[in-house]
Length: 299
Length: 326
Image 1: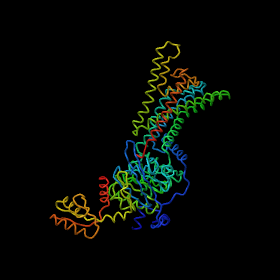
Image 2: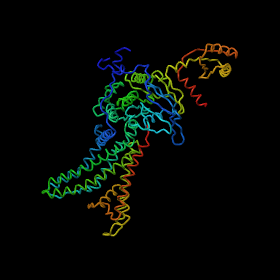
Image 3: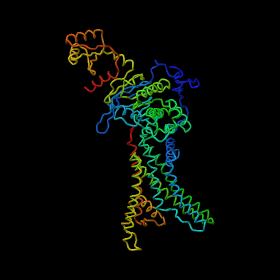
Image 4: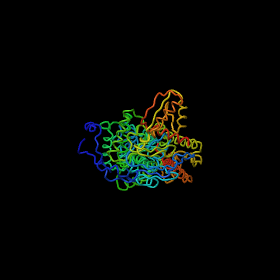
């Protein structure tokens, strides 16, 4: 073969890799980080960043307004444990409906999974990494506004006891946010993993969260309006609250001692049921996610 | 070639006469899918170092074998080992040693080849910096240069196949499993891909298994061939012994092909029909005489009679027919 042809077409000289190799745990960590970045469109085109940026902006807006209000002498506008319930439910639904398929359906549609499974990772490592990454991403979207709310408030309050009071109110709020992130990431990733078509995946996630939420709040309101004012919430109202992840989360929050009022009535003796249904939903989503990928082969 | 990049691999490669341990061994390997579908049926075969063609029709068990070798399927019976490691128990370790190129499309459209191969390098266990370096090198080795910064969705099929090969190469594997690497390519693309595979096998010191249903195509670049059909081994041998066995006499008569075949077999020659002609293996020196006498005895118009080294594919077709008949 003429030397120039070889030089032009293939510059050979293969070098072995003698350096360190990462173990499975470190590979999972690399995948978590990669997926976390993907959830915010980082390292991707500008188009991929549009929704995450809008979502973060919308979620932080009440915190920003609060900072102004508190600076002008008002009390804190928004509670930590519910934030702005309808805004949070809506914006988080949009976030997971758009970004869960970004993490899941893209890989499914491009059939890239066999390349992961032909590598040291185990089959359950892939959904585990995606889940950890997406939970972290949801946490960022939920908790950053709370932290801003806190910072905007304590910037204007005076005295250590006031700051301490705010801090004590913030901590349960952060824990409620964690609960939201854990459940929403699990449910949305499972739904997104069922279809490689992004449109379907986004639709199914959005419909699941919106439809169940609408249904639950509708039933709750119907039952409530029928009841005499001042009466304790009826059993039907409490059962209706079991129908959607958001009302479940809120019921558990109330049962655990959350004082802020929301649509869901205090579940009372139903509290444990709320917790069990929420745990069952959570476990089913994670189990379904693991099963979805344990079955996946090379095609 | 740039002397600073002179490949050490070629000089380090063991001389050809040294008989190395096989890179893949299977022993009575049997895989039965739910519903009683037998994908592998007692397959016992060794793959020697070098480039080996794994040939068989679709459904012959090639993909099942690959999955077992990667430790992703547990065989019903028998065992398999890759580079001396048991596939059933050391799958994770084996997967660090294997680069796998799937048959089907497996590339996301909206990332650049560089980003994609770098990420796959990370997933192979390379630290971040090493993954970037090796991704650039792998893409250069497969012949992708400036275009590697473009999104994969804009690539031609040939370029995509090269990216698939690059991601298999990025983790510095000891063994490459390439499943139908020329799929979807035009003739020039096929030739280029085969040349690339041959070069990787010869100069990078990496053993390669090329699974294909097109034997005529890959026989040119393989040192060995393993043919399977219906989950069973048809034949495993070096290319040269395959070709030695393939000296064949091609006979065409205007009509009466079937009668001539019967006549030849009556005279002890195993002729078989291939398209419009009869193929007779050239054994002893009297084959020509027997054919001449048979044609003359039947009074048939002989239009063609030539000796040739035919495509191994035809030889397999024969074996496949025989296997089907069993």
